[in-house]
Amino acid sequence: MKILRKLWDWLKELSGLSELIYSLFAIVFALLIGAILIYLSGHDALDAYYYLFTGAFGNTYNLAQTILKSIPLIFTGLAVAIGFQAGLFNIGIEGQLYWGAFTTAVVAVSLPGLSGFILIPIALLAGALAGGIWGAFPGYLKAKTGAHEVITTIMLNYVGILATTFLLKNFFKAPGPVDQTRTIPTQARIPELIPNTRLTWAFVIGIGVILLIRYLFSNTSLGYDLQAVGANTSAAEYAGISVPRITVLTMTISGAVAALAGGTIVLGVLNRFITNFSPGYGFTGIAVAVLGRNRPEGVLAAALLFGALDAGKVSMQLFTDIPGDLITVVQGLVILLVAAPSFIRLFSSLFGRGRELIASE
Image (cartoon, rainbow, N blue to C red):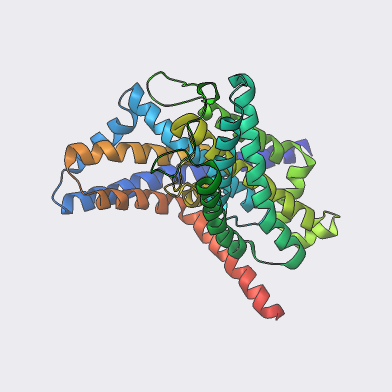
């Protein structure tokens, strides 16, 4: 038995190594295709990639910007991955993120007398609670009525964004033409990790959440139940697992993690809540989760890759005069080729579920 167990562990490690090798190969292949496109557009591909690399990793400041841009994607990618692990497609990350950011800002502004040691955790936890509750709604609808989470979460995105805008404009707006809250107290701001870079300890918080979710998946009965439901709902029910309970809990946890993306942006970057502040972190989180194979450590690597591409393209466009659209194409190629196997598995799974529903009707 011990020999078989060691053989099984070795095969699992080999599988993970093959995925890593494939991902590296896909990145190189995508960059080669991108180089051809850059050359055909009349630009020097070597110069372009040189500035892409130096813009992301060339010095301490650029490296800090890469990490800074990856922080929201760590939380949103992890939130999507949590849902995927239970067989749920949470596309409502954007709305949950807005509730987290709004609630975090309101709590921070409302409690200026507290020290930062107390105020920062309270504000972030309040935001996580708001995002968790917002995520629990589609989870409850799924569990009780069978409403598909893709539809409900997409709809609740718009409701969440517009609801926070309404509350801000009518109750919490600071004087002036911009729709934003008052500036949060100085002690409520997350300290910088590297001075003069805007990179804060939010990155460390993100690493902590990754380790926590990793522990949840690997070492707790809840994590086992969550993954069992995602693997086979019927088998999980037969084993005595309450699928409705896991559905609601999963969406709640996913929403709370998504809300931390908004909360850390408010306390670490913007220092206030501003309407329409997100460029689409919630939707980008879907690609991050798929790219990271829905694993916490994979999400971290994928978020850093996205951060590097985002930080590097600024330098690439500035020094090579390459059109921004072409840079976006290169980014898309990297994402598409690395994530291709996971996308195929995801759509195959969704297509299979759709055929089962049609057959049952």
